[in-house]
Length: 522
Figure 1 (tube, one colour):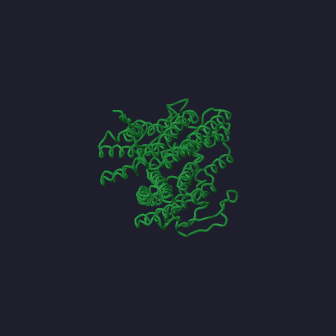
Figure 2: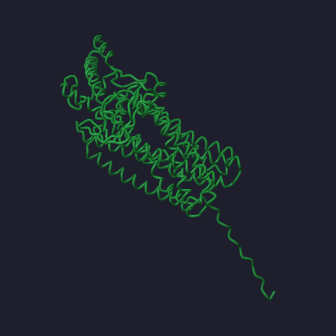
């Protein structure tokens, strides 16, 4: 197996996924903010709210187009770069994506057209309904995508079929109501609301600093402050809920995030800062707060947070059990009616994926040595320093957003925008921070699942297509060049829209026909 192909495939998907997610959260948040702004226009009948809605809809439209373009590329990669993944779990993973395309995306695309071209064709209430449906479609699209991703993190409602050698759905409601998927959805959507609020807040602060369109900016800032404060509080609360879900479903990810090398007596303390060292399997210079991790992760004073060393021992046991399941599958391939093999498989099928980890070291997992099993068990530990610091930086930005929006809300409600120019400068400078936090969130979510493409079911190194490194490098360079160009175009379009300001383009005045001047002779 050429592991450069695996690494390059992962790099390409990471680049396209992280790039795509620059646009998705802004679309999620702005769609809901447009509903709020247009609702104010319908309720008050004040033209300025119409101007506000149309301006931010323009920003939404620019961002929406590029989000769609980059999302389509990602979906095609499952067939081009991850063909065995698609073959092995496509019956399960493909269902939510198909529903997203058929239901959410088409609804969203239809109502987006009506939203932009229906201002003069629809009544105010009809147009508000259209804008509302755009927001519903956008958030439904996120729901189905995160249901698919949540199943990768916690593969419930499916089983391995020894006749087809594929994973198949057994309970779609379990896939849909997967606790990991639901926690990821509300947390991700709330992060999108924060990102959109920070953009609106920052642009409004920029206008106030320049003394331009101040009435527009003050009203936009008020909406952003209230919506952003609610969103930032939700991100922290729902992030805590996501951590609680990890305790039951992704214990290794939780242990890596907290650099918990060993199971500590309950309730475990949380490490604020430190230097995780994989070689010595300790965390140097750590600053710990007692009890907090236990309370967050187990909601009790008696629940334990299992450490990585103990989880590796558990993985060792599951690999040994998976070897039995793997041998049974090989027998069932040749003799599907073998009752003993069927019984052995049913008893150990939950651990089949762990046996596949051994294919990194030996062609036949049943022939693996104890040293190979031990190495494969430690492969289940993700990059602890990366997880540890990515999570803390993401969480730190989250708390900064709460402080930012709290200050913005107080200033906006007191109508003292001009008196706090220092805050306006901070609001402009803070615009990139929530995007950084969102990207770090995906780093934690996806790298924390490694070495699995489907947690406990399919190792990442087995999921790729039969490609060459040269082909992957070529496509990475091509995507980087294309997406870099598109990014420059979008940024320039958005900056041009901001520079133009919330000014409605008026029709050209009709040419004035000169009246004939009577001659003096007449």
